[in-house]
Length: 175
Image (cartoon, rainbow, N blue to C red; front, top):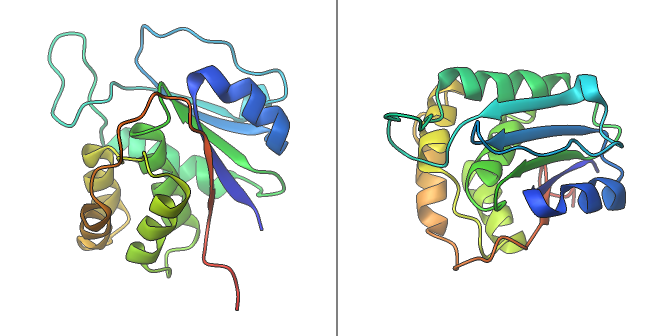
């Protein structure tokens, strides 16, 4: 089963090599520079500049928006799933877990949002999906509040040091 690997920026190269990822989504503030790991195909790297905020940005802060979510969905749907997809942000705690859930639901829309959120919590006690990305993803994917409620049910994750990558299965394993 193909999976999504969620990682903090500091561990993207290690996680890409360890899991054989060839495609990557980066959710980073515009001023944060980094190098794409060489094992990631340049034409299959989506860089979305946004800050980890849950309100409309002011000044230099860029809030996640509909366009960002639509790009995550389009990128996920174009992913061939022959290797894991790597999604990262600065700490791998907020923006990237939200993007991973959006990607999973865009590929498997018939799955239960609560089961997805519980799978996320099971593999990451630290994940606190960005509420703005979750809200926009819920709307764009037509979840009718189910994704928002599911993320609300798992609540805020434990305090994190930004060094806890994890692997999220796209769907429940078959019985």
